[in-house]
Image (cartoon, rainbow, N blue to C red; front, side, top):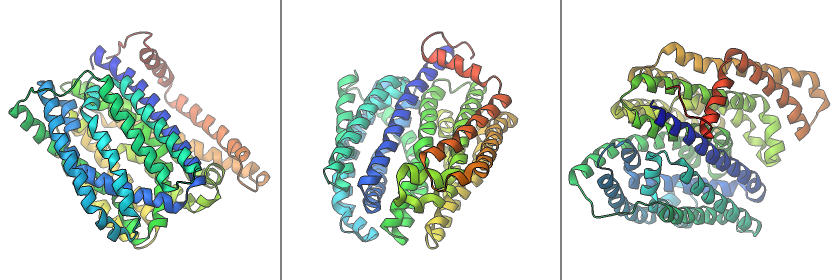
Length: 490
């Protein structure tokens, strides 16, 4: 990458990481607080409404966000096309949501679902209002402004939700928190972004935006159906309460790891798009990015596998003990799922058709298996989720080596070294529990600390031995992110 793009990307990672970590931490804290104030039935209703609204929201997106970021010319006309197409689509989508809410009542066998969906749909209107401004900020790698606005939305959402939950509003506490948070974000985008819609219009540009966007839209919709299939099948065949446990488990799983994938992908797409012609440099960037993500997800996955029985009762409370086997079965998903998603590589290089074929293969493999598992048990659904991602991750890594210049040995090393270090962590946990486990008959914060601190220390030592340059690289990138010196390794 050019020095400018590399420096902007590293600075962008700083701001996205700040926002993502803060957002995830606030969400995890919110889950901890609301887990003691709300019931699994409340979480189940939120999960049902979120699924329906996210499905309906697919109609209004049409992939314009990625198309605008990837575009290199006629930016004003492209932004206007995005704005006017999006305005019409969001109005149509809202009407569709109102019309389909009775169908959701029938599908999930719960009369309360319709009102919850209709109120939560207001959040989609607010999100669409600032969509173009947000895309332009991402395209320019202006993640500082985006992070500050998203943090404001997060604090408003959490503050309102906790306040209303203490006041006894139940499920409506979280609903109104999300709606008001999205409204505040929309106001901030319009107030802080210099771009506003104009009459500049070009039909050729609009058609190109539409065609590219529709390809991304189709891929996004198929990916969403794949990722949401487990929730739909659990809600339909096992009920709202099991769906509440499943949703809670997924929030715990994605809480510490989702931000890592989100950070890397959000910065990678605009950065890769700016340097889309240099495949050698993109390959080196992707290997490094994958290695950093795996270094973070490997210890988290191992900790959940060996320590879920301690973490759940201490952190979330005894009412969620049912989720312990679910979290253990989903632990491989934590490590492997980032290796399935490389869409910034495909989109930036224009290989959307290859991405579509891979997504179709994922869908045909995973969805029938999830449907059969939902007729067995919740644990079977979680098992299928993990097995599917473990099967498909190597396929995706192989395809990436065909799209950009990546040596297979370098990619395997970036994935394999964190796995080895994770085995060291797991062995340490088992050894410590075997030595002092009898001293702690019940889970407690003290036992959790004694088990985890030496395990994570051994993990860091193992990583340092296998990657002696890692901490020097991190110091260099930290200096760039803080503006202490410019990036020169490009």
